[in-house]
Image (cartoon, rainbow, N blue to C red; front, side):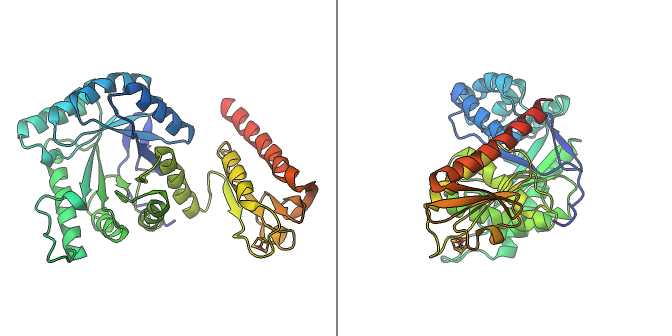
Length: 365
Ligand code: SF4
């Protein structure tokens, strides 16, 4: 990745976004916020996969009231997602949330905006301005089935973001993050590139409404990945029509794929071909599951055959290669054991469990 664009740090609870802080992976709960127990259960699952910040929708008064319990018990900093309803922003802040996602320009009454920013300032609560190409004020009209030109959409997005920022700055508020989202990567990339040099605030990246996990992950990897590689972006959220845990896993996958120094495990698996003589896909799934417990950078490979496996997996720290009725376990390209097929994955899992235990002990000490 190229050096990160310089911006001011903003604190969300105990997490720093921007400045020299590492890229923060965050997500948003999908449970009904009024159901505090279900929301907290989802937050606990998100914490297990190292989600750092969680956004929670606050669409109603009941949801804002549930935030009291959610905030009290949440192990992660909470950002309240508010759209137009300013009293909900005040209630969420009173509940103790660590951040707001709110566009001040959407709240018509300037006195209400003043009230929100005054409370946010007093409580040290940052505000994320979120501009979405699909809901721009005075948005360029779709012309006879054609999409508006990209530069027009980007200009409108930048102008909307700067408008919201000016409102907050005029109230002497600068604990701001900004997101420029679109459901297609080219618009999202262009909008973030366009605003990146104009502001000194951290940027939150995401391809919105990206779709189900397969296509959504691809779009997110393209949109978020291109920008991160250019040094743009301080926190990311992958939006999938699926489990929020998967959003975090894909988010880390994007960061790790771009990083010269990955922070987590990397699973290498051969694409399989006509030489395959084992049932490889269930093996890959088992190993992938086991790697979720490992917190260190390690390359683990699962290869389909012994002919090319150890050679093709030689960059792995540890791996297995299948064969006819048996397979091998290798470390750094060297064979360290031969096992019957059904004992091959358990042999690798024993090694991975030992590594995971070491990681747990390190974290505990
Ligand atoms: S490791 Fe073996 S089975 Fe897998 S792709 Fe390579 S040659 Fe084919």
